[in-house]
Image (cartoon, rainbow over all chains, first blue to last red; front, side):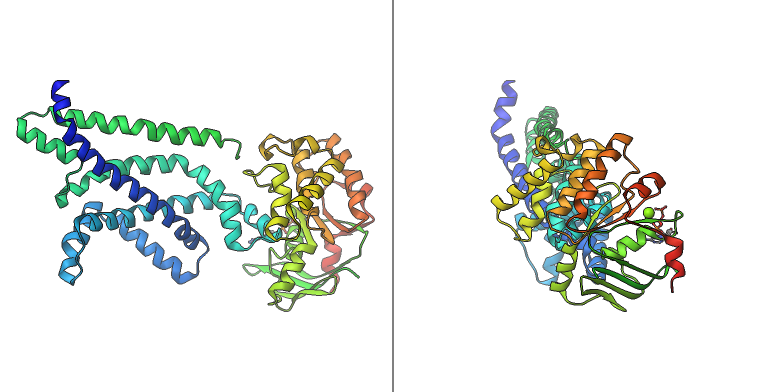
Length: 213
Length: 221
Ligand SMILES: Nc1ncnc2c1ncn2[C@@H]1O[C@H](COP(=O)(O)OP(=O)(O)OP(=O)(O)O)[C@@H](O)[C@H]1O
Ligand SMILES: [Mg+2]
């Protein structure tokens, strides 16, 4: 316990970095996925092909490779980002792709009659998406979102390859310093503790929305 | 003259479904459309509601052209037509994330046809006519099939349609709910035309002011 308290300040530093990447990526990717999912379903042929290609790239290559591309690769093309910016761009682009696909599936699984009913009631296509289809799709997608959100929490440790001191790297440094594996155990427990409010909170919301069926 | 369908043709993947269908429906009529499964009844109603586009022919709604060899390009006109043609889906298609009252009011509020107070007043009046007043703040998942159907009718009526179409309204109802439907349809008829698809001979015979066999329409060329 005393050892844990001794390590706590550096853990908290790492944890704050992890949480910042996690929250910023989550919020921006989620907001971006709302219009991209609309375009993925209702956009013109060209836009749909472009989005499909983008999603194919993002899902088909390792996230670590994408991080390396934005930090180590782009400077060769004369574009340089800071570590934080490069990592955030990679995370956001990657997770927007996943969220878009989740929402697309959620919209696709709705009864097509819902869109037709909205059309007959005079809704434009965008209004039908915003007011009728999206709210139902979001509710149905909560389990998939929980999945992705927890995966993202674990994926944030990939920024350590760019030399960023996030939670896992703070454990690695402590482990090297004290020549013991115990810090890894502590950090593992911290990750697990973070999982609980996230999945419990979202499951609670899902339950609250169970009247939508 | 209110609703005019003239020589409508519709083909799905080179299979003709509607072949020169013509049909005229006047105000205050209750037209019952019958015919064998797959003869195109639903397709015809969907063309009338602009959910499907015919290949050729003409569809006029109260003098406004929805389709004349091609769909009208006039967005404003199309909007008016959508308002004048209502449809009660076979499975009602209420919006599950909105309460009954919201299901009724959302569209008129979105289209800015009524103020919030006016919309609520009108919706509550409709709900009380349909014996649904105590369900105003309930979500659709808590309603019975018959209640859902009446909400769908009320929702369509909020837009003051000139014709209301029903696709197999009795297929999911028990006898008691079917009996409840008669006075409602009679009342609708006072202010609009009603077009009903049904396989239920008994129901069709009792409610119709005019019955049409889809085979017959197909023959009219
Ligand atoms: N979107 C579609 N794509 C391809 N074929 C279709 C489509 N909609 C309908 N059809 C075909 O058109 C024919 C007529 O269908 P429709 O639903 O209009 O029949 P119906 O008279 O309503 O039958 P039922 O009494 O069984 O409801 C059917 O053979 C059906 O398979
Ligand atoms: Mg049918």
